[in-house]
Image (cartoon, rainbow, N blue to C red):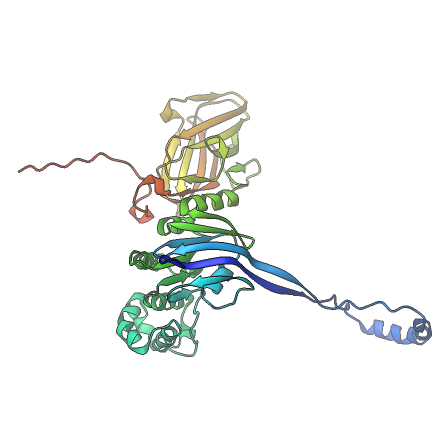
Length: 428
């Protein structure tokens, strides 16, 4: 391998055998046994002259969890590995962590690896947290002196001082993850591999872990990160690999790979038929029938930061309503109203006779922070009040792209990004 390549896979594959048991006999009742005994004597002679039917035996088939993978990862890269459940992500990480052997091809790895692939990986449940730090550290390649030198830092990071001498079998899953990640992150590996297990921890600890992985990357080490949270992937990683049915479907910049994944995942989304929604409220004089999200004329539920977003809404009016107001509220995943769009604020008054109407509402530049959002819909008039109200009519995702030339956007800094003009002058 050339100097800056730390992982190279060539025609990498992993095969498993799936066994199928033959169909078993049905349950036999006592009356069946008695009946068979009575009739068995007469049938015995006849059966001697019949051809016996072969009993099906257990069978097996090959399943390729990974097949023909080719990729190279350079030193210092932070790589997001994404894909649906069953795509082969964990199998790939197990091969790279040398937990399992490939069935085909080969992989070359240069440098020490620390991996966190499951809650409590490498821990002994009967040992205390203190003892497991030494055990797990030794498994990951640290000698006793190195573990002793970093021990206090590991404990402080994991926030388990109070339970350090308690057997880990009594730990919660969150405590397991905190301690396991703390050990893995302080090994100072050339390559750090982290699976989805961080989802077990609380929000503050997840943020701390992401910060630690960012520090590892800034120190020139390589990070491989698996997550279904595209906000974490796009904020932390520079490149991405998309797996689908054990094969690489896309690789390159993390923004492009994440967009491909989300567009595939959301291919049936971006539109909602609300006709039969039973959780709506209002007097029913008019009802929202459908809502659809489009980007440059194409239906989608995934938008990059700064993309135009068009919402196409159809409303079925049963009887005349006057001075009508249609409100579109964009709400964050934690229930915070981020933005409200009103027809009356944009010079689009609406007095509706009975019939079907279609609205198109466009946000030229979507400047809300990356995350998952929902669309709530209000339909009211000044005379009869609430006509139709639906929360979470549909959901959509916002991701960040490197082209935005912004630092990674973190929801902790706000919900809406607004550009501003700055100047500075020295007064004296």
